[in-house]
Length: 343
Image (cartoon, rainbow, N blue to C red; front, side, top):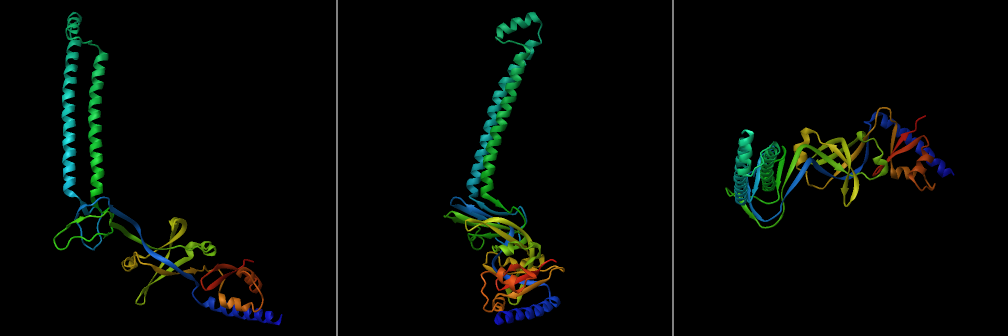
């Protein structure tokens, strides 16, 4: 019992010391280190679906503006396909013109007969074997309209099919950003290359925003107000950057749904952060307290030592015994952060 009481006394002394320190220090609390990745706002990978000749139209390393032509896949084949498409459209229009010519001649004859006196009109109907009335005229007009619409639809389908092929073979920048090639362009002035294998061809990146993404799975961390979280990423050479929480969303990670937190990188740090895209990183997660929060951060080993020989099964049980005026705010990597209970 004396050992337990001495542990309680030590805990009280530690509480006083830590409370004084927290009152004078910046209210920021270390949570832990997490696997992290620098990710852009948008990223699209364009595949090469079949082997062919690739013409590289842009081979620079600077940021690229939207609409810049990047590569042309099998450009000669595409030119032939376009010529075939245009020729087929022309054939459709010629066929339409022939049909419309016949229909309009029939319409002119019908209108001419309908304009004659009744006696002559009857004679001409028997001669031309044509029933000259408004219903026949309306039917002719409808046949003309149907033929025109059929040609329009046929040519539109041809154009749409070609545009789809063109979109797959003429790759332009969909937004301002950067491009990364998975296939090396030709050397020197040679900008065309025969690629014999299918697979990723290039990746375009919208770097107007960069984020640091982590997946905090601990329940106590997920329950924290996310707007009070911040990441710190060491870049080496004494350089580091800080990123406040921006948004979160559920994504598929390792074939299961995971809650991913995104922290926004400031504009002045994006160029340095860009160098880390694709790298396996580790970032520190920290919690910033509000003015009215009374917090106490205790190292796990120190908190366990305060118990002395008193057995405990959970941190909650130990905190309830040693610090009854506090509750656990979060359980971090090395420390447990306690929050003063409301009175």
